[in-house]
Image (tube, rainbow, N blue to C red; front, side, top):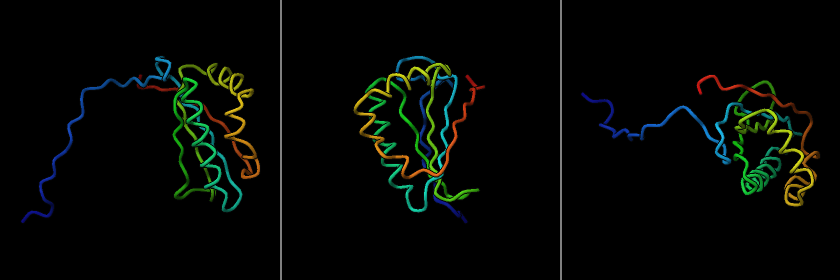
Length: 127
C-alpha cells in the first residue's frame, strides 16, 4: 500500500556554491540586521524595508531578504539579510544611501516602529 503518490521532484540545473552580488562580485559575507519592533508595528517596518530593498536593487546592491519571527526570544522581530562581497561594501552603501532622497522617503519615520536592534556580519565558508 502506497502512503504517498509518486511525486515528480524538479531537477535543478548544476550550480556552484558561489552567490554573486548584483555588481557581479562573489558574496563572501552576509549582513544581518535584527530589529525588535514595538507591539503591532512589524508590518509597517516590513513595508519600509521592502521599499528600501527595491531602491537599493535599482542602485546595484543585492536585494534584501526580509524575515519576521515565527517563534523566538522576542515577539515582533524583523530580520534583514543581505549578501555583500566585503565588509567595506556596507560602509560604502551607507555613504551613498544616506543622501539619497528615495532611500530617505522609503525609511522616513521607521524609528517610530523599532525598540532595539543590532547588526551582525557572517563570513561564508562554503564559497
